[in-house]
Structures are given as structure tokens and as C-alpha cells.
Length: 590
Image (cartoon, one colour):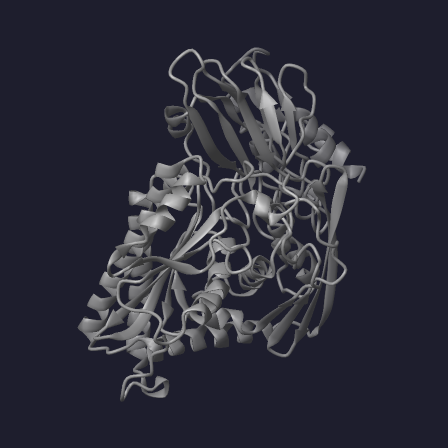
């Protein structure tokens, strides 16, 4: 339903002070919406890991702003998805009290597990704004989330853009259908209820803001906000040297079939065209990416590289055009399977950084672990007691890439914003036990600014009963490359602890009662020549346990000696010293 601007509030006549005030208040309102969502959600996926995004849109479905947290794949894809939602329910087909829902991958976030709930809000019978959120559902049926499906139909319950509720109440038939098709009905519906409630929280505060400033509508102010972001990004683009910048990257893919991602970034005046021609064709496995998701991470990459401080909204999308050949891995066509699309889509920012590095003054970070590591655990709670099942989705991150002036971040996801849930939370809700969760020495790519350190995770179960894991992971075959002379990070691994045998990735693996699984996450690539890293910082890394004595010598040319007990569990800085003569000799040979 499209609103018309209220009299006297044309965008050109809006007081810029009011625009600034509304912009700042909207940030607070969106954080309030997100807090309500997190505090009322049922699943650890939303409540602890923040696998979500919240946003406000004007009456035409254009994104005005987003919450502080959330993932680019959710928020940016949802911004594109609102175009489909508004087109599906045009003027006159919505009323106060309606709530819409969809998880169609080609309409919003590219995966059936991601559910978008969008609510139109009215004042005096007139549509003034939308609030929406996109959350990863704890389950949506079909195969346990992996890349094993051959068609999207196998991946779970697919909901077209439809009404979840009206002023008369919920669509109870739809709710029954959802409950009957998922393994976690209470958690799944509880999260959907939380999305509905959080949208209302956002609208309540927006209406208070409108009353405070005497606003009949927000479209005009929204246009001014968007125009500011657009102008700021265009200004940053003009600082680049016009030209065509290309890069390519090989990633694990599925099984023995790796993928090639290729990009050409064309900078011309104040616009950028990002073209993924040359990338692999779409796969028969569930690692395909829909164009919404490709646009989402492309837009995020450009903004992160050029204008991270500029408010993110519809205006930030306008100077960037994204192209990918139909039928390619980055623009898959129905009915391609898409459940693990993040295992490809998350590489796009590092790929774009690689292409644009020569064009950006000051440089851009080296490649990160990139693909978020997601494990889905499923099984019987305890076969010796009352038989029941558990399903748990957990997340973890390797290291991010070294930066032009700083080290990479340790065990911090990039480009996603999803968090790892606390061990205590996971163990309280399921029989899963994390017997180790430790930093992984020598996992960071050496560099003047080293990559981020990754982690190692060991997992078993309590009690007896069938259990399984889907490890949706990447960078096991191809490590994160370094930049500007930096070295690659360490590759990841996924194996059975008792034998050390590699386990199948992106597929369901059934485990025995006594099995323990080890996940070693990949490290971030290093930035700059590691032999130019200051000696005292190499020593600090040894003391902190980030690198070993051997790595300090072999990778950085720094001879560090340890004088403490060999079996010491606590090693203080006084137990280490740098052999300056040997270090000078080592570094003098380079």
C-alpha cells in the first residue's frame, strides 16, 4: 500500500536538523526492536547467536535503517526482499493488523531456514511504515541443514509471501502446517511470535517519535536520509581511480568438486559495477547462492571497504550494481538446492577486497576464514530414559584477515555478525558436551600484521543414543590467502578424535555413543611481510600462545627462548627472552 507525502513535507523542505534527529532516534528504535526480539525468542540461534536482522522501511518498502547487530546476508537480502513483498500485496490489499511471512529463498535471504516477518503499520487508515525482521529458524523440516539436497523441495517447508496474521487473529491452519513440518515446533513458532512482537515494539516507538515531531508520515524524511547515504558513498567512490579490477578465488565446494569465484569490479565516476562472470555454474548440491544474497554481500563489501561510517539504508545500494550470470553458482535458478549458500556467499567480501586492493588508498584486509562454520547436531536425548530428540544449531568462527594497520581479529566472524553461543547454554539444553574450546596456535597467517587466530573445538555427547552432526564448513582444502606479502592462514579440519580420520563435510555424519569430534577452524591470512613484524610483537604472540617458538623462528625470523619448566601449565613472560644476535642473523639472511 503506497502512501503519498503529507502536505508541506516535501523532501526539499525538510529541516536538516529534524532529519538528523530522526536518523539517530531510528537507530535507537531499531536496537529496541532487536532487543525485544532477542529477549523473547525461544531458540539459542536467535537468543544467543544473533542470527537475525531488524529493519524499518518507508511506506514503499525502501529500507531507512537497520539495527546495530545482524548479518549482511539477512539485512541486505531483506531490503531487496521487501520489493517482492510490496509487489505481492500492493495498495488496497493490506489492512491494520496484517502480518506477512515468507522464507522463499528467491524472495529474501536465499535459504529456507531464514524466515522473514514483515508488518505494515497504519495511522488513521494510512500506511506509514514497515518493520521487519529475518531470523534463522532452528528447523524448517526437510533434510537436516546441509548441502546434501539435490532440489530445494528436499530442504524443508517453503512459505510463499503470505499473511501470517490479520486483525482477526493468526492463521491457525498455517501455524498447524508449520508445526507439523518441523522438528522443533515450539522453538520455531516461538521465534516467529517473537518476530511479530518485536515489529510492534519498533512501531510503537516510531509512532511516539512521529507524535513528538508532529509528523503525519515519514516518507519525506526517509528520502532525505537515503539521499545523504547515497551522496556519501558516491563521494567515496569518486576518490578511487577509474578502471576495471579483477580477482578470482578457489573454494572447497562440495566433496571433491571445488568452485571458482571470479569478479570484475568496474569503477566509473561515482558508480561501481560488480560482475561475477567467470564463476562456476550452479551446483547440483545445496551450496548455490540466489542473486538476492549475492547482492547482499556485494553491497556490504563495497560499503565496508569505502564508507563503513555511513548509515546503511536504501541509498547505500544505489551506486552499486551487481551482475551474475543466470545459472551460475552466484545466481542459481529454481529449483536449485540452496541450504548452505553461506558457504559460498560469505567469500564475496574477501574476493572483492582482493580485486579492489590496488584501488583503495591505504589497502584492504587480507582474506578471512570467511565462511561461518555451522554445525547441526541431532539425536536421541538418552535411549535409557524416556525417548525424545534434540536438534541444535551452533556456530563458530575462525580468524579474520590481517589489516593494513592492525592484526586480524581472533575467532571473530567476517563477514557475518553471528555469535557463538556460550558452551554452558548449549550443554544445558542438549546432551552435547564441548570438552575443549581453545585457541589454535600457529593458525593465523604470518604477516607484518598477522591474521586472526582460530580455535579448536572437541565435542562428544552425554548418555547413549543415536546422534549425528552436519558440519557445514569450508576452507579445509583452500586456506585464506595473505595480502601484500603476507602468508596464508591455516586450513581447517573436521575429524573423528579416536582415529584422526577426516569426516565428510556438508553432509550428515552418524556417530557412535563414544565418538568425539574435533573441529579445527581456519585462520585468517596475514598482511605484509612477516619478517617486518616488530620483534616485541612476535615475542608477545609467543607469550600469549598465539604462535609457537618454531613459528616465531621459521615464519618471522625471531629466535625466542623458553627457560621455564617443560610441563608448566602457566607460563609467564619472564620465562621467555629474545636471542637478539640470532634474530639479527636470521633476519639478515632475508
